[in-house]
Length: 332
Image 1 (cartoon, rainbow, N blue to C red):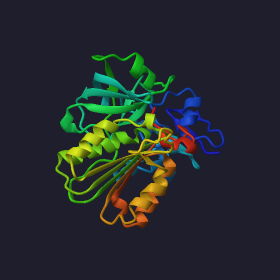
Image 2: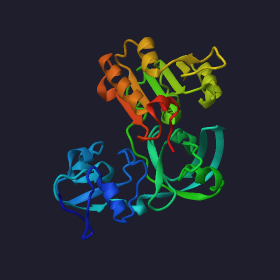
Image 3: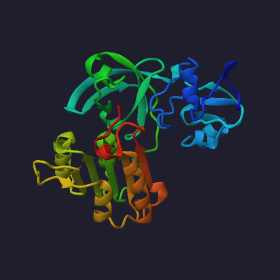
């Protein structure tokens, strides 16, 4: 069994447990949010020993060179000595300027904060010094506020606090924005395919807003899915936006349509997208939401002509919903 050392403390890892779990079992408070390798809140830096390659997935070349890694993805096979890289000084104070319930599952919050971001990136909103949640940014920097779409959960560590305790004018802490799921204006004539489930609509909304603000003149196809009509949100706003922009095509999608609303697409995204988009050469593709949908459509889009570097993905944390309810899943 490898020797794991943190600040002169030896950590024992149970079989099948990752380093984050081992630290928490040892009473070490680790800044973390998603526990799935997305938020990077639990990042550490190796001081000695070998870092498993999978623990550095998603990090930049410079971060890998400096031996940074994610504790939630680290299953050491050899001795490892490390320090946590969480830096409280890197966080920024944000002020809540607006919040509004969008439907029974989604809360919208807007924050003012002195950070740089690109629409579609994500930030960590911290409830305490060591516990936070990751949210995608649905606004453009041109809007002047950071908009987040929060999955409402009765006992959510952050979501319940945001909805029922934090009031307009109150302050909180957020991390610098990260992630590569954002709009790039390098080729403003490329078709855009935006596909999301649940609050996966948040980063897609940010990408869409930024593309329109930057004068994108290619065709834009937006598919936003939910289990049933009442779980869709921003429908009227997006339809109005589509009426204003001839190149924008918005399709709300549901798995079940009890009232047979004719203006909704019925079906599963993994079937609808192949049926409606058989050729995707030169497309910029953004896939955000449930892991099974993202994995399937990423492969499909590549084999139908989209370049891998033109496919941007963002998945929810595992365990949020069962695959059967994936279309209704969201961020906490």
